[in-house]
Image (cartoon, rainbow, N blue to C red; front, side):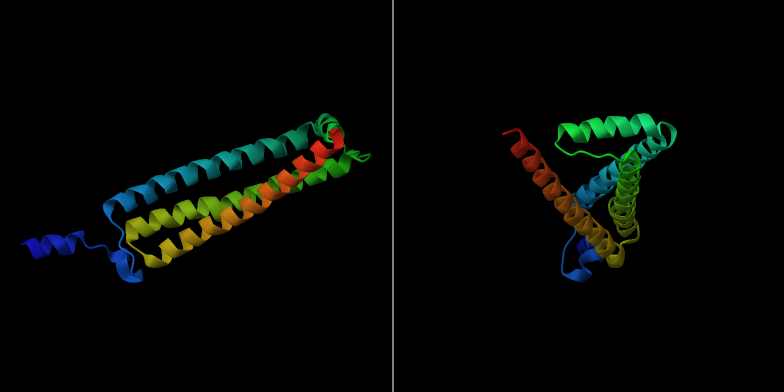
Length: 152
């Protein structure tokens, strides 16, 4: 009877020489919920940004131009700001969908189906999301340092 209980507790995801116990399953499940929430939140933010650009393009361009002017950048072309903003919104939507939301879906499938392939795909999506987030963070820090150097 004890052997049967041990076999039931044995995880099918251990084929990669990694034991996934109930605590790890719970943590992965929680991470997938948060990944899905943040992914959907980013979809909404990107949608609002695109709607703002589409409906109030001229006013939005003036706000962006004022913000960039305060950072030391001078743009004469409002259309360029709108195109860059639309491109950034589409890029963030794609990153949120293909990496963060995909992580959430794949991890949930892996836990439900006990599939090593889905687990690997989900972890890979999360890795790519962190790499892109790191690159964007570094670029943001560099722009912040540049704008700080203008005021000093």
